[in-house]
Length: 288
Ligand SMILES: [Zn+2]
Ligand SMILES: [Zn+2]
Image 1 (cartoon, rainbow, N blue to C red):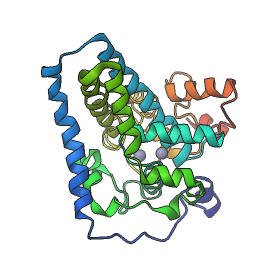
Image 2: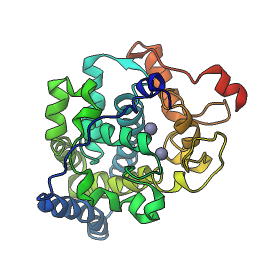
Image 3: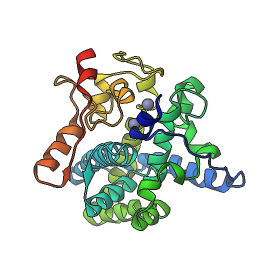
Image 4: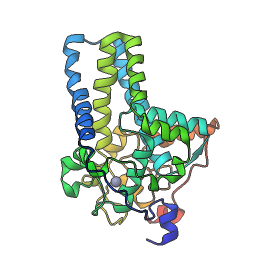
């Protein structure tokens, strides 16, 4: 890839971050949280379910899905549009609530994914095994640290560095909110069940969207377009389009490629909360 295009797509080379091999306890703590939250779904058999629980579960699923797709992914990782420093913080805070670590860690790791997609150095390629790509990589010590060199642009904001460090705080506040709204069953549905569904939906983009679907563009990797995954993840299923041109805000390149994240961002642009949404190059659309 030409150097100028690498810069534009934010996949230019950076020095490798050295991995601290003595961070085993972090793996144990994160595995405990990961499986503990999923096991807690079973508590629903004891707490039961109310209408408020279902509303909490569904609304937290979709709000946090948007925070990942529209915030962590299309804003922090790819800078496909611009916004204010205040709304940037809101996106980062809501992204933390999805319990996928902090914005700088997530976005830097994702830039790595695009730099090396499906080659050695990609942290979640299905070529290393389907389950490894889906969730195993999360516990791989090689990817623990935030690669600050890949995310210097956003690491310049102290409030983002702070959130990146204290990424567990927003989910705790979210749990307290669920408890205040609907008691313990609210916590089970709003945190455990909603987050479990959110995680596995998000992770299909790392696993299934590099295996299952159609190929429009030759991208040199295994990325696919898949409408089922696009509906489930608010537009991220147009993953082959996305790998072809990551700087575009929309990932559905044509009107029939439903991309809910993009529609919401267009709505936010209409009221001036975000601006400068970027489009795919016209010649790509002609080829498509
Ligand atoms: Zn990908
Ligand atoms: Zn991406």
